[in-house]
Amino acid sequence: LAKTTQPISMDSYEGQEVNITCSHNNIATNDYITWYQQFPSQGPRFIIQGYKTKVTNEVASLFIPADRKSSTLSLPRVSLSDTAVYYCLVVGSSNTGKLIFGQGTTLQVKP
Amino acid sequence: DVKVTQSSRYLVKRTGEKVFLECVQDMDHENMFWYRQDPGLGLRLIYFSYDVKMKEKGDIPEGYSVSREKKERFSLILESASTNQTSMYLCASGSRQALITDTQYFGPGTRLTVL
Image (tube, rainbow over all chains, first blue to last red; front, side, top):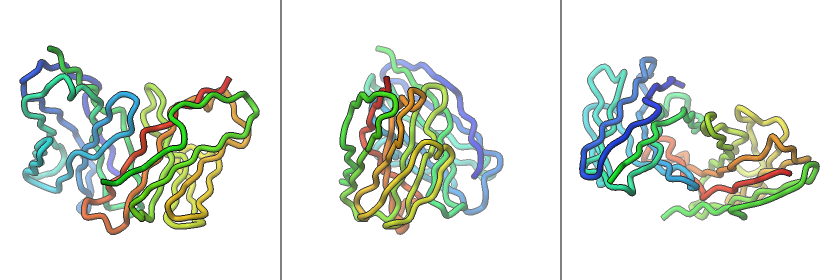
């Protein structure tokens, strides 16, 4: 499974757009990039997954360049409730269903 | 909505006790997983199961065992609890036919303290 690297922490203010970048240099052809969000004292929850270019849903956007060696999770107009840990994962090619969680990025949104 | 429930949110046990953590999912998922989460170490996979009566070791299986007698239920067993097993335990489930590759649905977690 490809290893991912992302910043340990980020700060933002309410109403700003937040971009969290993840690098995954060893991503395999069949891998997808997936992001999970974890609030304190809760289990992680899936927020978005993509293979290439751009994916958007009601929560976030995911930008993946052509070489797929990095990706950027974009959270539009964050609020205090977006304060959480965000995990970038590479999934799929191992076909085991296992997830490898790194340290994640702790996003602190300030008023 | 997928629901994964865990038997307790908080649990306090004594060293040497046998501890059972139960997890139930209601989406007929084939795959179920047990993780522990510790500060600075992230989520680490303890055991997982692809089907009833099947189990596979994860990255840190020592001191733990599991049981999957029914598809919807996956139990984590601490045969003799030790203080270094104080942690947040998270259960997850997922489908092999998932439209979103390898998506897992997590329960709320059980915070176990071993005294």
